[in-house]
Length: 478
Image (cartoon, rainbow, N blue to C red; front, side):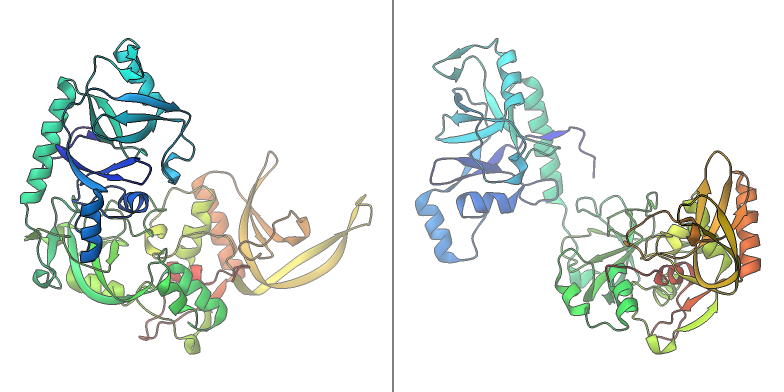
């Protein structure tokens, strides 16, 4: 489907919802075929802009004329009614300086004061008895934070309206595949839905576990909190959800990979397949690689195998948790990247977790250090002897005098942070050169031989290293 080239929509028709105080709030069908600001519209006038499910409510709506379909034709006669006022109860307008205009067709609207300023500049501040003289206005929907606005009905506005109409007509002419037509293992695309612009393989229905659900399960030792998270609208966890794999995901921003963002997250989860796709694609999957292994093609078999080793799709069997040797590459990717290395593939391999180093607890049987103490007045320090440590984490020091990796006492994530030199067990000095940094981490690894808790899925597979290191994080909030 051809991309829409303008930054605003001007439909040929829209719906206006009018409340008891004669305030009107407009809505149009957006590029996805959905009504704009539907919840605000319903809260404002008491009805949805389309047919009500409740027959009595639909009759009541018709009798009260609370919702009307309006031709978005150039209209003159708009009047300025009030300054510094907003007639809507919506957070959209909370921090905006608004004014009130009266539409000659019988309702009032609030718009940004800056829009009125632009209108007045265009008509030479020609106002008579509050009426904006010499200009005709049309309703528009800009691609910004404003729910709607008005603009002068000049030739450019009329051209945009024609393009909006063509775009909407083209969208409505495309027939979406029914959910019953979408088959496991096949690749689909869309020209109109929120998944447009990318290729998705359908993987069927699966149980989903968010990163927070898994982290809390580790802290608690069970999944007694799962139902609570399934009910939350801001959490991806759920039973029998449809799972799609975006075989050409952008994978460019490690922060959004876990947010179920269309086109960015490798896995996309949804409760419904309705109106998501319109085309079944025939493509060579060998041309695309897995998000966490660029040597593996995006075949159905490889994706399914990845799912068996992902905390996003599997519960943990805590009876099988054991202590094992930590994986060096996972340690380097987490601690090395956070302290200056180039962006590695660790962020992708850690899905569904973030690759933070905060709160990660490692273990060692070789933890020996020289402990020092300071006097009460901190006027000098003295050697307190050789001591042992077991739990540790890794951090970094970077000041004028030295750059090094420090092995130190671990602190739980979200725990109050304070600086205490007695928490540092050992330092591994290096320059800021990447190779020197890696050498310092390697030396630390060989000397301490770090260990971690190795978690195991209920299907018997061990949790892969980059996910497993994140499960070794302790959080003060859990």
